[in-house]
Image 1 (tube, rainbow, N blue to C red):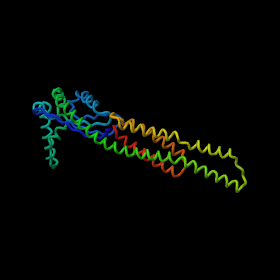
Image 2 (cartoon, rainbow, N blue to C red):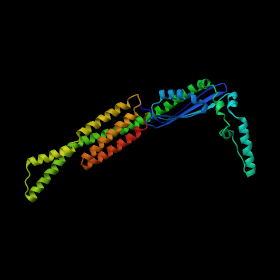
Image 3 (tube, rainbow, N blue to C red):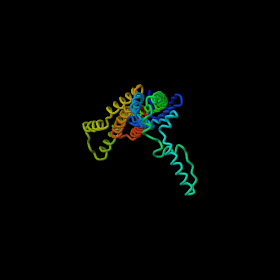
Image 4 (cartoon, rainbow, N blue to C red):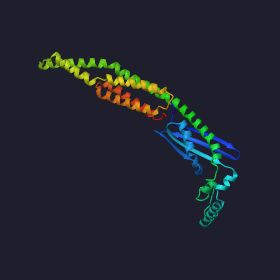
Length: 294
């Protein structure tokens, strides 16, 4: 079954006054890319976080956001209360001088330089944090994959429908080719007969056979149709695979488009050319949707 590369998952863990919430959102990417949004004091956990993510996810850009509420003693250790108070009084005094009303928020003050002491933050016990971080991260990753699987089921249905259209168009071309050759032979004979009647030109059977051989060689698409059918079979096999197959689907869809372009260059019949245009459109739709598959 296919997995989508888009999804969302959330996990949380708590112990006493300490609480950690982890949220993961994922979007498309040819490779795996992690964007960690967490306190600087947690940077020492980066390698552990990446290891768990790589166990669960193969492709996609993942935003991992972490919010952490520590014990009162931890919070007091990392906040420079003097700097925060200084900012507050300076902003209030500035507001009085300019005659502006000030609406301050604690969150806004915490974001000002020097209010959060990064050096003090380094003293936080990372093992205690990891005891909360790991289960929250694993839960978030599991919930993310649940959503990606659900999205993947919808993708599987859509891709299957598109693949059916590709198969039908391929079969329609294959079925119509003998008739196209016969019609060309009839047109050629009529053209020859017209020349004979109008100008008295004589055409040998050898010339007719040579002309038909040239047409057959130029318009022969047996190999292209055979490869197209092979690609369709490969796609069906890939879509039933439990592994991440998105990049392989992208490659096979490009190969199908290559064969369709060759069919378009060799087929001169107007009705079949229209079928080829529809075939290429369906392959493009398939390729675009395959970009969403992990």
